[in-house]
Image (cartoon, rainbow, N blue to C red; front, side, top):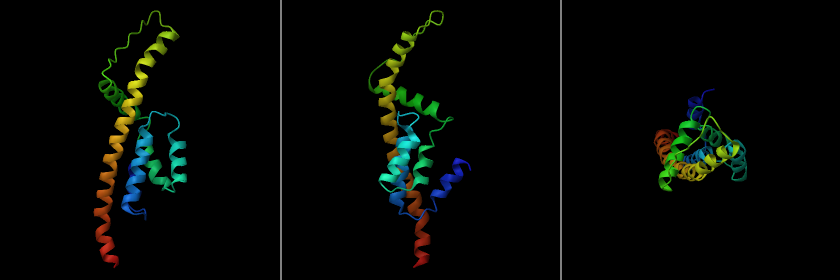
Length: 148
């Protein structure tokens, strides 16, 4: 099942629009977090602890996937570098590359990456809450009126 099919399933979940939107926004934030490799575990743990819909949180978390992760994290790192007023210049001597040189360059990227991921993830999650809430609220009004 493709991600778009799973997104459509969210429209038919029997939770209030605010709860679905909140769950989705939390999942999106987790998916954009810098904790690479732990997204699924964190999302399921949060869903269990707060009794959130597991499908919704996982669909949102998986919007960051192998095809989207590079542009998302690149953009996030650039935003982080700009906010921290840091240059992302990386100088690698490909003829005499060393492990310490790689660590040094990774260290220069780490803080902008973490900062940018948190900021972009937060903004994306707030926007996704609004979008999902509005879509679900508008979509459900006609059905709710006809059920009365």
